[in-house]
Each structure stands twice: as structure tokens, then as C-alpha cells.
Length: 346
Ligand code: NAP
Ligand code: ZN
Ligand code: ZN
Image (cartoon, rainbow, N blue to C red; front, top):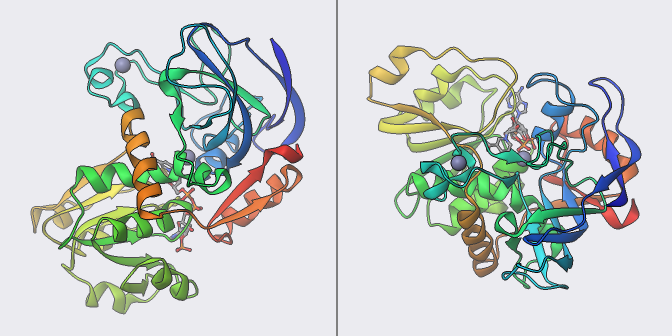
């Protein structure tokens, strides 16, 4: 066992504070990783604030992990000391169910073991990336291509795969009229990925204040959802809408923006349920779906795609003692577009 520094939440209302946690010695199939950067995902905030149920405090959040391999177990074949690697939202799954067999570990029938706030196979709580080091089974580690800097690669481990997976599943490409709701951490990566895949991307943001950025990132349309005219003008305009908003929306208004047979995919996971008007679905054979991160092989494919197409998130690198202020700024939609913690300063 080793002892490493970390930032943890001890309750829903207290700020995160510096502490220490234990990491296991690498077993035969484990990779030990020196964490260099960890992104701040809105899911970290939902979790520590107990918006998804009361978590198992202390919570060390962080599932956008980029680092360097420092040791490998005797049976590890995929990674070597010194290589750049990433860890996303999962550190294990049952590996036997039909989802796991299909490379959809995120939909493991027994529930994947998440990177934090889960119970690991050895019965200990999992702790995430706001920490100096982590030890993970090699099958849940991905390689970060050399052309991606580690700080910009970190957010791809959650925000990147969460957008890439539905874009691929719903076959976004040339001719797809795609809308992204919310230009935050997830949304801005979605604009870049959508463009790289050849789709025609429109951003639906609360206001026009980030419009210049949205167009620079690759959107060709940008509309304020605070303006009722937006919903009249864009009625029946899209094949695919990805909702990345962390709060409740009036889903009926957005369903009406889909053309016949269009699909609205829920990526944001707000605290409270949202009513769904049946008319919005029935009158144009529309679908409402959801999507959760992506599988491990797909995460590797996404990283390779980002390296090949030059897709990197826009980040603000922060020191660990700025985490609590960063949380406040995420909640105020005041981030362009992902906070990434410089773990070397912990
Ligand atoms: P984020 O950076 O805070 O972005 C969310 C965006 O939603 C904001 O930038 C804002 O965009 C918009 N928004 C916020 N509050 C709003 C409100 N009251 N009304 C309308 N729009 C609002 O968060 P994130 O890290 O991208 O995560 C977004 C959501 O996805 C969270 O719920 C998170 O837990 C979830 N998530 C899901 C998965 C998955 O696998 N499904 C993975 C990661 C995260 P504008 O300023 O442009 O309006
Ligand atoms: Zn996340
Ligand atoms: Zn499984």
C-alpha cells in the first residue's frame, strides 16, 4: 500500500479539502499511474453535493484522468513504465454479461465499478483522480496518443467519450443535422466531434454570449434558448439532438425541434425527473433516448480519432486549491470549457 495526497469531499455542504488516501500495491494485472491532470466533470459536483443520492463519503472525485505509468504487474501486456495513459469513469466490470462481452462495459448488467464512489472487487471504496496516483486493471486503462498533451487529453476520458459514443451510435456524419444543447464541458467537445465527423452542428445555449466561441469550435448555427423565437424558427429542423444540460429542461419544446424520426438523446443527468409530453413524441414518430459514457475499446477509438483529427478540449488549468471555486464557476456556467486540475501541484 502507498499513501498519496488527494482532495476529498466529506459532506454535501463542506468544501473539498486536502487529505491522504491509500492505494493498493499493483497486482499481477494492474497498472500504477502517476496522475498528472484530472478534469472536473459536472458529475463530480452532482455526486459530492448528494444530488444523485447520498454518496459514500469521503468522496475523492475525478474520472477524467491522464498520467504516466510508473509500474506494471507481472501479467500486464498492454502497458509499459513511462507510457501516457488515461482512466475514465470505470475501473472494472463483471466482464461476463452480454454488455461486457459486447464491449459495452458501461452497461454491465451487474453495474460497472466506477472510478469513485463505488466498491472495488476487494471491498474497498474507489477513489478518483483528484489524487496523486491510482492503480487500475490494465483492461480499464487506455493509451493516450503522443500527439495529445496530457492536460487536454484528460477531459476526453469522460466528456470526449460521452459525446463520441452517441454520435457514432446514431451515425452522425455528413448530412446529419445535429444540435447540441448546452455549451459546457460536454457540449463544446460535442461541437468539435460533430464537426470532425462531418455533421452540420447547431448549438442551443441559454444566451448568445458564447456564440463566437461556438462558431469557432465548428458550429454553423447558434441560438439562444431564452428567446422563444428560437423554438418557432427551428421547429422540425434536426435529425439528432444531444442534451448535455445538467438541469431540467422543458423537453417538449426540444422534442418539437426534431424532424420526423429524429432522436433526442439525454446525456445530462439532472437531479430531478423531467416530464415528457407524449404529443412531442407521437406526432412525428420521434425518439427519446439516453447514453452513458462509452465502452473501453470505444474510448480508445475516440482518443485515436481525436489525435487524428486534432480534436482537443478547451481547458483552464487550475491548481488543486482552486477546486472549490472552480465548482462554483461550473455551477454558474462560467467555464470555457473544462477545468483541469494540475495534480503535480497537490
Ligand atoms: P457543464 O460544463 O456544467 O455544462 C452544462 C451546460 O448546460 C452549461 O454550460 C450550460 O450551457 C447548460 N446549463 C446549465 N444550467 C442550465 C440551466 N439551468 N438551463 C439551461 N441550460 C443550462 O457540465 P458537463 O460536465 O458538461 O456535464 C453536463 C451534464 O452531463 C451533467 O448533468 C453531468 O452529470 C452529465 N454527464 C453525463 C454523462 C453521461 O455519460 N451521460 C457523462 C458526463 C457528464 P450554456 O451556458 O451553453 O447554456
Ligand atoms: Zn464525467
Ligand atoms: Zn458485465
